[in-house]
Length: 168
Image 1 (cartoon, rainbow, N blue to C red):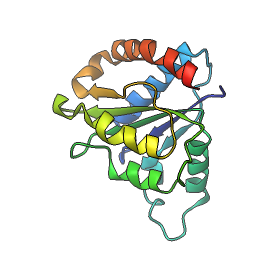
Image 2: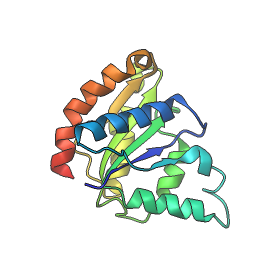
Image 3: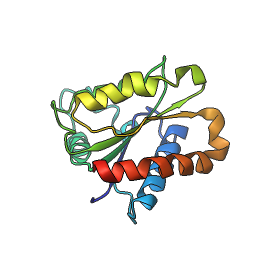
């Protein structure tokens, strides 16, 4: 396994989702014995490119990084009960089956526990449609969990990493 790619679908740079995604990636990487968690694709930086008539080489590079991932942590805040339109628009640029070599770990950050099923009902099917293996339940991370983020992620990574190892 070469590394983990972190895809962050929050339109705001420096968001809580960004922090949670990177820490989730690091927690899983440690358990998989990876020193370098890998590359990060932050869609806040690419937002203006996604619908551009002539997208930049940065967008093309980001799509290639995501498509070549062995393990892909996909994180988004929950907007209107699902992932962001920015994340969807980016993933729509990938061809069918583009994630067939990836084991994906979906993560949604949400304010209300009533949205907890969104990670399974909305984000998981999108990743599977693109060909990814999603061997574990997605992580529905509540904003109220952020003060104890390391503990939450440690428990999640302990459950997740063995299944990722088998799937990858």
